[in-house]
Structure formats: structure tokens, C-alpha cells
Image (cartoon, rainbow over all chains, first blue to last red; front, side, top):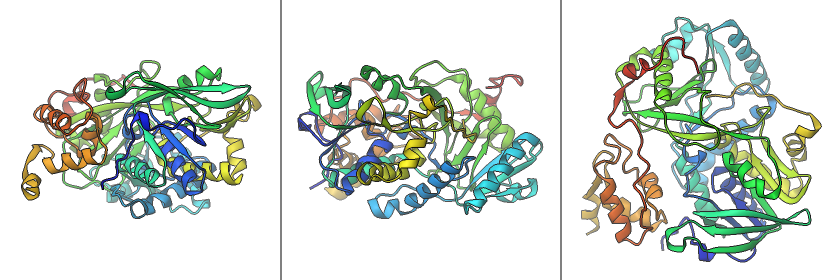
Length: 400
Length: 95
């Protein structure tokens, strides 16, 4: 008997203990850990298909090179979880720990990298500053003219994102969690507490069907769609979507070790296990809101930044481009945990374009927070309430 | 029969076989976009121009969700060299 990853609309129960909205990696990882710890009946709904949002559109980078202590510590643990994921879940995620190489083209960027490296080393990471000659020894094809220095952590990694989503979905299903794609959720609250949601099927076979589900605990893990999903509750979230584009080339023989990144232009690129060069670049001029269309301007910006850094790639052809949305917050840190005004609502959003890589550890910690009352400090510090308290938390190593 | 199905190619760019399509649908990848992601059909050199209609038909024949549209088309229409694309923006044109 083959296990199906997802279930149809009519299999949704009338009530559950936890309703997870959003079947991206954040919602799935959280549901998986809640189920493992015995949280009761868990239902996950998603507006579209698995991998339709940022979980299926990101570049697959997993790194511990960050500039804030919290991100460094959490990503360290996420990388450890990635190491064990294939064995635990029985699915190949094409994890390749060949490092991340950040390039600095001026003194200011160099100083920023130096400060981050010092902090990372104090947290036990092997990150180090390297000069142009060592950059060339790691990636001989880089044009180092104009590059002052780099920071290199050989333990950072890239993965293929999709099997992570399928792995968590299958593990959820084995633990009795049901995953329902193509279901819209309109969240409902009564008397200052969550009561559940009105669900609408978007699937051809049950299009337009509606039903209510009762749930005392609702986890909002809808990434760039979070402000829109929270709005019917009268909750105004400060995060907003920002389109990021990405493209991949024809496959090449494996030659590129680390993911290479430049915080100045926002350029990043790596070689996938299929051999393609996959990468993106900053583009401030994008349409507002959730927009997943591709642009020609992006290809120009990316190609220019990439061929400047790796001139040898000029003759390589781009095969496909796509886009997804970052979920940006005013201070660069995520928004997680409880909301003062609504009992039973848990936010997991605002992950600034690195939600995928942080999801394995956030999923685990959210389950501990909800079921064992642990991790209260983190869930307070990164809570929505910090914006009212004026306790903003900067993170400068945001790519793309 | 199973060995034969292993050798029937439905996406020539990515070497996706009929057997893999059957397996993906059995695992619950019941819509065209999910089927594309699980098998990789349509993500190679031709970007689905040769295989998408066939894969859509196979999906419907096996009880999957009838597609209301093809997979999202991914530009460029034909592969383009990075050096050519780099000339799209001027030197002063930053992000």
C-alpha cells in the first residue's frame, strides 16, 4: 500500500487540536514535531500545492554565517538537523556541506564580515577570513580583482528544497497528521480567542465546497501571505512580501564547491547536485505585494553580477527563471509565538528569506514551547509584541 | 511489464520514465504542478515544450486532478548565454 502525502477535502475533520495554516516547510516541520510530542489531532491546510510557495522556490542554502547570535545558534542546530534528515525521514535531500563563501569588495563590507566572523567563532563555528589567494584556492574561477577579502565557513550547506517538504509531509502523515492542499482558510476568533477557520476547497474535484473546522490552537505559517491571512482577525502584521527572482543554467560537470555570495550586490550562486548554476541577486524595484512573476531586468542584473565575479560562466546558458517571495520584517528578525490580543494564535512568519533553512529548528522549538513551555525567552524576544515594546533586533546578513 | 515501463521515457530532457509518473501519482502527487516537481518532467532543456501535454494526459488517465492550465511557463523561451544577458543592464544600473 503506497502512502499518499496528502488527503482530500472531505477527509478534513470537524474539529482538531491544532490547525496549521500553510504546508510549507515551517508548518510541516512544526506539525511533525508537535505530533511526535503527542499534541493530539493535527490538521494542515494550504491554499495551493506542496512546494508552491517559498519552500519550493528558494535556492536551498543552509548556513550558520549570520551577524546575530540568535541566528548563528539556531542555524547551527538547523544544520545538525539537516545532517540527520535523510536518515530520519528516509528521503534524499541532496545535502552537500561544501561551505558558503562571502565576498567583500570594500573596507566597510570587510569590517562587517570580520565582526560577524569573530562572533561566529565565539559560537564554535570554523568560519574564517580569507584573502584573495585563498579565495582562488577554493574557487579558482573567481575574478578576485576588486575583492578585498572573504569569509568562509566550510560547514555551511546547500540542499534540494523539495524533498525536505515531501519528507516532512510523509513523516507527518505517518504520525496521523493530515495534509490538505488546495484549501483556503479564513481564520475565525470569538471573544479574543481562536475558534477555528472556515475552509474552502480550491481543488477541481471539490471546488467551492466549504466547511468549518474547530481548533483552539491555530498556527499561522503562511510566509509572505501571512499579513493577508491574519487580516480577517483584525490583526495587522508589520511584515510584507518582497519578490525575489532566481534562475538556473544548463547543467555543468561539478566544479563549484561552496555557495558564493556578495552582500554588496546581493549576488549568490551555487552548483546544484544536478550540475546547474542556481542563483539570484538583489532587485529593489519589484511590484508590491505577493508577486511570483519573472522579469527580464532580473536576468540582466544577475548575469552582470555573476559574470563579473565568474567571467568563465559567460558562455553558459540560462535555462529557466522563477520567483518567490521573501517575508520581510521592519527589523530583519522573524515574528514568532503568541499574540497578546488573540488567545490560541501562534505566528511563525517574517523569516526574511531564510525561513527554509531555519525551519527544522524552529519547528522543533515551537513544539517544545507550546507543549513543554520551554524556549520562552526566544519566543518573547522574537514576538510580535517587540514592535510595541520598541525592542527591535537587527540582522545584517540578508542575501538577495 | 514493469521492466518495460521502466524504459518508456515521457520527458526526454530529464529522462523521466512512465514508471516514475505512475509512482508519483500513487504517492499522492495528483496535480500537474506537484507531478512536475516530484518527477522533474518539464524542467530540462526544452522546459516542457515536448512533454507537458503527454504528462497531463497520463495524469488524467490515472485519476489525477484534471489540469485547468499547463505548468507555469518559465522564461527564457530558449536558453540564453549569461554574457548576452549581462548586456541588458547599463553599468550604472544598480538594484
